[in-house]
Image 1 (cartoon, one colour):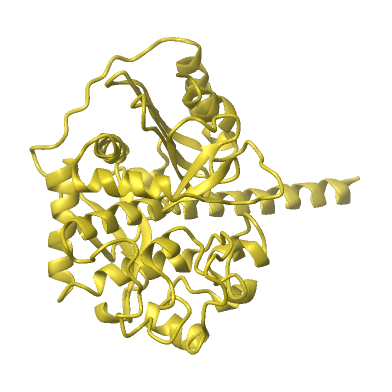
Image 2: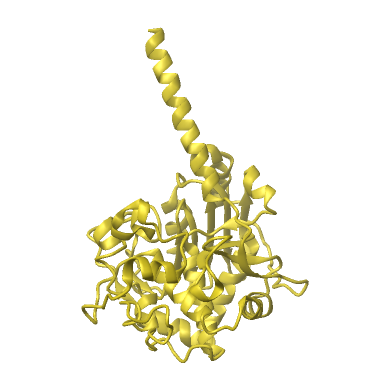
Length: 385
């Protein structure tokens, strides 16, 4: 009996340690980044907090953080924050309440690229990428920017979820699905030289294939248009401080802190911001989408050119898995909501920002591990008209 109890205790201890490690990883901050500072002229956010069934359910899920993983929940509708609750762990508090995007940052990359087009650094979304030497003589150089943003680059025989597993860690950034071949800490030049030099896109209409490399290629293609990192950061400041109006510093993580030259493509999509700055960005994206300015036209172009995911099944546990289409790094067309214009950002471990472009509603969720009730907290809330 003692032996059995000992085995059970050891199993619980090991699983607890694994869970703690996983929780820490999902909100771990890295300080080697490209970013923008905020300032005092930040976008003001009004509050009119509700005390209703939803807010009480959020409170229960937030308080039960060790089981749900939920650390932050914000609902913005009718021009006001109506639910705003958090229960940050030590990792987040230590890092000035900065929250890690994980793959939500893919969508923010697309937003930055849109501003790059509007500022004239790139001609349009239909330009081929072979004018950057790093991508020349690779299948990515055979693609237009829009094709890469839509994850239809024809790279599915090398990397990504289509051939190497849907919703698996390895499918996002491992060549041939092998973890040892990860692209995450390498520059674009290194990845092209290691795996893609001499490759060609076989079909013009390639299938949707979600991967981290497509996002890295697209943002670093834009960055290649800048003379140096200082110029690029001025550009990010123009977007996030001046256009959006963030209050605190926001930033994109670099691929590594010690190697990879700026000109080799060393930016990742991982993004860091406070909860309310994420909301400010989401609000601005909605406002832009509904405007007649250049960035609004770009966002509507992404929507109009969305592609089908063609997944075998859809599970209501996160936005990426419960949407049927993808448009320029945003998840679109929720199951059961096909006539609604909703843009969703989705990140590993439960990070979510879902934006109703017609009604101005935003649902923002950050977590250390995803065991919260996604359907009640996000889908059921966003589906309301």
